[in-house]
Amino acid sequence: MSQDFLDQIKVQFSKGLPFVAYRKPNEAEVKVIFQNDQELYKVTDYTESGFVFAPFDGEAASVLIKKDRTIAEAVTLGAESIGNPIYPSLNLDSDKSFYLKLIQRAINTIDSGELKKVVLSRSIEVAVSKTTFVMFSDLLIHYPKAFCYIWFHPKIGMWLGATPEIFLETENNKFRTMSLAGTQLYRAGEMPIWKEKEKEEQAMVTQFIHNSLKNKVSSLVVSEPMSFKAGNLWHIKTSVTGSMDNTCLKEIIDALHPTPAVCGLPKNTAKEFILQNEGYERQFYTGFLGELNLKEDIRRPSTRKNQENKAYRTIKNKTSLFVNLRCMQQLENTVKVYVGGGITNRSVPEKEWQETLDKSSTMLNIILK
Image 1 (cartoon, rainbow, N blue to C red):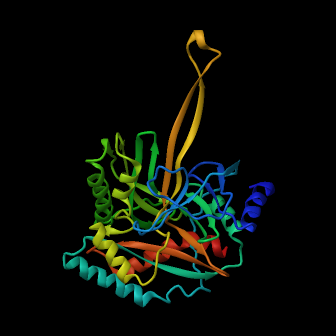
Image 2: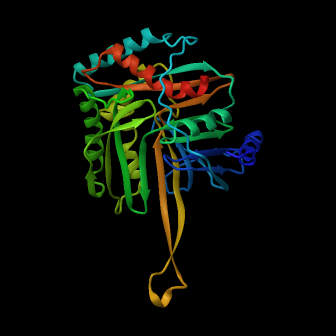
Image 3: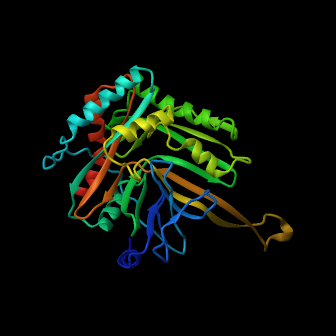
């Protein structure tokens, strides 16, 4: 990013005014949305326009940054970071005993028949010497295939991250979503070999999305699952597309959020287990964020011979939302990194613990390098 571009963001922050800077996966352009006042705007029915930031708990209100002013600048895409370093200076095992017991409690609940799957998470607090703006620049460089962002509101604080997962994209009445589950560490030259636990976990998410939408949309198409690499991790991904017809955006969001990829099945039972047992508040981790009902004005030349000097104008209404994974929250002199994993009856607690360590490297690479 140029210094002038970055300075405009810093000035907004120094005034205590809300903003979000972000870059979509595989795109070069960084966009910034500035809000001109400190008001905490809430989303009521998802007909609003701006940038939405939604918490994990769908009962809590989503926050809207209004699009009062925007700037954009192209940046150079870097090579994707795939390292998985060891951090000897950090005590990453401080909550290991609690987390292992939590996983076992979840497995026992699954065995009793109350749950099929539940996603359990934890947070890691790390001292940081870099500014959030430097860390955001590093995210842009190291994770070109992710949705990278830095978000600030004076009444909530600062968040940033690099998430690989689309929650929901719409263009007029067309939509696209995905199920992303199962995790393996990337190893150079090797393709992942998925075990039954990982396949089942991903299939649960796909089936949930299909069942949640089949009576609300038309032309529903579910792709075959495929391996998908995000940073130093492999996942299993399935794409789901269709037409919204007369279904409103809020109805689809309410049906999907939180998906089994971040919550569990049955959804309400898993969510209640999480809220009662995790021992901390996720806030915006495993919520979603992104562009809400932004207009895109497209002009294209006519191909008709008698109108060669005219242009057709198409205005598209677009929403582009991402699950807030691989993220961190800025505190005073520390940041809080959030990680988690899906638990089923095939889960092995020690392996699930290791998965959270693997996932933490996405943010720790940025904080500590």
